[in-house]
Length: 389
Image (tube, rainbow, N blue to C red):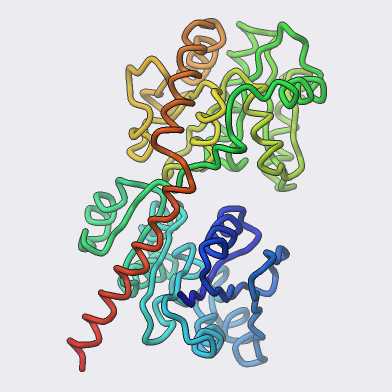
């Protein structure tokens, strides 16, 4: 198939999809914003050129930060048309949703990232209008959340027949337990004594993704387990990161915190999951994040928010995970300490979760379902064309 992807190649999930689709033999054109940095190998990456008029419309006359999302379809349409695609696939409903919906007379697939439909689309003003219009304009909507149809029907009134949610799975050749050499390297790099349990925060370091909740829970965790180490992934130099680092210093927590301020590649992440006893994923909303699946595949014990997408693999009362009953620092701290202190439970969970990922979350199998989505989008687009002919 000839596929046009409208996506940000700086996102690791986009690069995974590019590599997978190329391996499956599809012809790709990737259209990306000029400010992006990554250029995935093997794919033609095209950057639109904005002219003086559209620059003025987008970045002077349109309220920030909506200009790029609102006006990029003008530049994207001719680049899409020149490729004669079988399917146009947009990733992220706010940034690329309108460009997908207004791509032209082609089958259209839209993949939300999470915050776009859980937050932006439900807001007033332009952000809400952009996401809602993007959802209406796609033939099919798909992302890594098997509860997606329930949510989109309830929140936006969308026809469930237009939704194909499925888990993308995980690369089980990389993310697996028993990486002892990588584990030892990480514990040495983190200066983690043998008696120090590690709790890992692997999500985006932003309040929406639970970073502030995690930082608030550190105090009671360290009060009970002062030898513990908290590892935080925070590669982006944001004001929020600086504020949280200052707060950790003021509270005397700095000796226990290890800040990872670089982007880690998949093997590095797999080693870090093997090195940590516990990981935390407690965002306000989420899809079935690959971060969670990767950690489960490595045998790292999960402390999770009670979110619909997560319930495929973790539910309240399960032995192989702790699912929080409320987004509260005290509850999170209690869960982390409880996981630290119950070694037999962690070992049972590690075996159970890793085996479950092998059975249900092999990316080589799961990601192939996207071809079924493309085929269904083409059928719906053909039906739409016959009805309007």
